[in-house]
Length: 77
Image 1 (cartoon, rainbow, N blue to C red):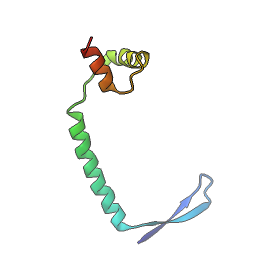
Image 2 (cartoon, one colour):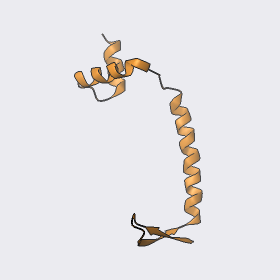
Image 3 (tube, rainbow, N blue to C red):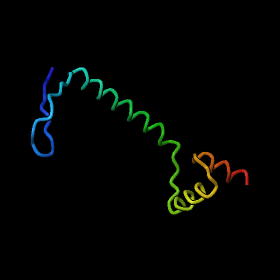
Protein backbone atom coordinates (compact mmCIF):
# COMPACT_ATOMS: atom_id res chain seq x y z
CA UNK A 1 0.00 0.00 0.00
CA UNK A 2 1.36 3.38 -1.00
CA UNK A 3 0.62 6.65 0.75
CA UNK A 4 0.48 10.02 -0.91
CA UNK A 5 -0.08 13.40 0.62
CA UNK A 6 -2.61 15.64 -1.03
CA UNK A 7 -2.04 19.34 -1.01
CA UNK A 8 -4.54 22.10 -1.40
CA UNK A 9 -4.13 24.88 -3.91
CA UNK A 10 -2.17 26.80 -1.28
CA UNK A 11 0.27 23.95 -0.68
CA UNK A 12 -1.00 22.83 2.75
CA UNK A 13 -1.64 19.17 3.53
CA UNK A 14 -5.31 18.22 3.36
CA UNK A 15 -5.19 14.52 4.10
CA UNK A 16 -3.28 11.32 3.64
CA UNK A 17 -4.63 9.24 0.79
CA UNK A 18 -4.07 5.52 0.51
CA UNK A 19 -3.58 4.07 -2.93
CA UNK A 20 -3.90 0.33 -3.24
CA UNK A 21 -1.80 -1.27 -5.94
CA UNK A 22 -4.80 -3.46 -6.79
CA UNK A 23 -6.77 -0.26 -7.52
CA UNK A 24 -4.18 0.72 -10.11
CA UNK A 25 -4.57 -2.64 -11.83
CA UNK A 26 -8.34 -2.21 -11.74
CA UNK A 27 -8.02 1.23 -13.35
CA UNK A 28 -5.98 -0.28 -16.19
CA UNK A 29 -8.60 -2.96 -16.69
CA UNK A 30 -11.35 -0.35 -16.65
CA UNK A 31 -9.39 1.74 -19.13
CA UNK A 32 -9.11 -1.22 -21.51
CA UNK A 33 -12.83 -1.90 -21.06
CA UNK A 34 -13.61 1.77 -21.78
CA UNK A 35 -11.53 1.63 -24.97
CA UNK A 36 -13.47 -1.43 -26.10
CA UNK A 37 -16.80 0.28 -25.41
CA UNK A 38 -15.74 3.48 -27.18
CA UNK A 39 -14.64 1.49 -30.22
CA UNK A 40 -17.97 -0.35 -30.35
CA UNK A 41 -19.88 2.91 -29.89
CA UNK A 42 -17.93 4.71 -32.60
CA UNK A 43 -19.26 2.26 -35.19
CA UNK A 44 -22.73 3.79 -34.84
CA UNK A 45 -21.72 7.45 -34.82
CA UNK A 46 -22.66 9.76 -37.63
CA UNK A 47 -20.79 12.93 -38.55
CA UNK A 48 -23.49 15.54 -39.07
CA UNK A 49 -21.12 18.37 -39.85
CA UNK A 50 -22.88 21.71 -40.26
CA UNK A 51 -26.34 20.13 -39.69
CA UNK A 52 -25.58 19.61 -36.01
CA UNK A 53 -26.85 23.04 -34.94
CA UNK A 54 -30.11 22.54 -36.87
CA UNK A 55 -30.48 19.08 -35.28
CA UNK A 56 -30.20 20.57 -31.79
CA UNK A 57 -32.65 23.35 -32.64
CA UNK A 58 -35.21 20.84 -33.96
CA UNK A 59 -34.71 18.68 -30.88
CA UNK A 60 -35.39 21.62 -28.59
CA UNK A 61 -38.27 23.04 -30.65
CA UNK A 62 -40.12 19.70 -30.72
CA UNK A 63 -39.37 18.95 -27.07
CA UNK A 64 -37.52 15.73 -27.82
CA UNK A 65 -35.11 14.39 -25.23
CA UNK A 66 -33.10 11.82 -27.18
CA UNK A 67 -31.31 11.96 -30.52
CA UNK A 68 -33.10 8.71 -31.39
CA UNK A 69 -36.42 10.53 -30.95
CA UNK A 70 -35.29 13.22 -33.39
CA UNK A 71 -34.29 10.58 -35.92
CA UNK A 72 -37.69 8.85 -35.62
CA UNK A 73 -39.46 12.19 -35.87
CA UNK A 74 -37.68 12.92 -39.15
CA UNK A 75 -38.24 9.42 -40.53
CA UNK A 76 -41.96 9.57 -39.76
CA UNK A 77 -42.49 12.88 -41.58
